[in-house]
Amino acid sequence: MTALDALFHLVNFALPAVFVGGALALWGRRYGKKSVRQTWLINSVVGTIAMTAGLILFGVDGKMLSYALLVVACSLSQFLQSRKS
Image 1 (tube, one colour):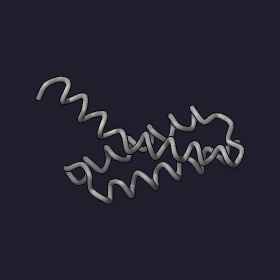
Image 2: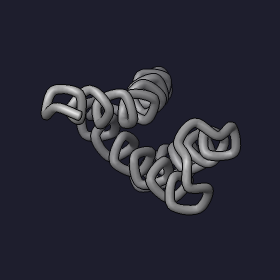
Image 3: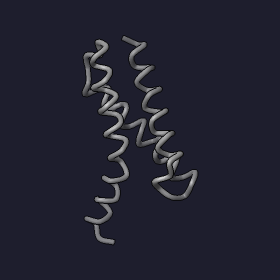
């Protein structure tokens, strides 16, 4: 595996977390959340951690339970951030 292949693997691993985190941050803006960029970053980091936990737990990437964990973790993160402001 070349360095470029490894980079593509890492980007494709984190892409669902970035997408879900961004979608939730944009959705939260409808309800008065001002800092979309900060919310997106926090949700993406939490989602990537959840995906990594799924990878460690199951030994492979792409299990539906890992994606469910991603959605629950990002939603919980969004909820906790919305309660602060």
